[in-house]
Length: 362
Image (tube, rainbow, N blue to C red; front, side, top):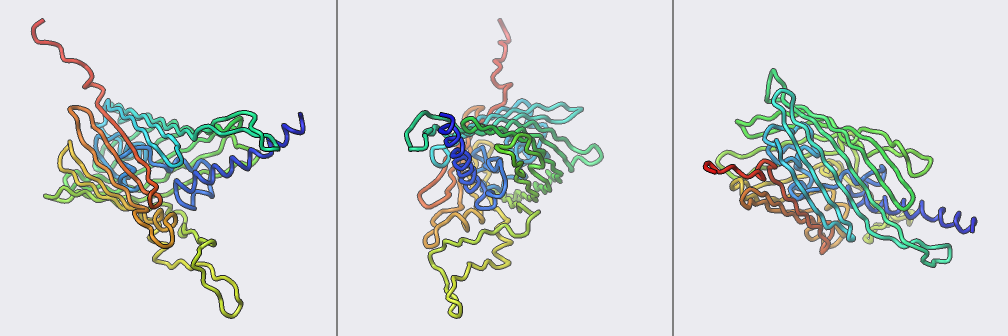
């Protein structure tokens, strides 16, 4: 029995490593496989997902903006709550909850929780016989704070701390990470610029004896709402701490052979291609507070996850936001591969709207 237990235990780390690698690939193409806790890059809400990862500088009442950029905290988020659900790839379920509160003399605070459920797995012995079942889950617990500079309210800053918790069968890993951001928001010109770092932290409890690095990321974002036009466009440059984030597909079917050596030539990625893989693009048609249409394009996702021949809509995303009375509903669809998409649903509301007004005459 002791030998049997040791064999089973020896199998699990490999399975868990494979699961982590697949999650990383889905979250940020191939670069994610070089860091642990890569699930922090997955957009948990519909609006962020619809914009293809470019929604870094959305300065409005949407509290999900403060989840990815703490300098977007502002007074219009006061008492707003948001709930989200994502039917992710491979039947992975993702749930999100967030709330924000503002104090005039202090600033704006927010709290966010993200839960990812990878489902139920069979536990087997060395012969392949099923002996039980286990679950795999990831969690993000995040608190954030942001406010305007007193000397110039066009400049905002923010910081957030996230506690990361992963539980795969009997294996547990934890980490802590900080996000910090500085933004320039000109509401008269309807534009915003952000520079920030994400996931600067430490792996407190590793899955094994090796502590892994977190997916540190330096980003710059820009958003502009056009005059006399419903279009707001967004651009984000990510992973600026690493110039080359491209992935060379050594299993590419259309391979080139060196006529002198007879060896297969690896794919060569040019400078322009390497630069473009840092960028995400998005557009939002803001017709009113109750109706918005969105479109996003993730260049790296299309380049590295799309098939060689027909990429289809890989890398593209779209969504819609609409108001029903005092409830805001957002929907998004993200395509990771032709015919394989993920759907996002998010609802938000101001908590004060639940309070029923007192009648004037009782």
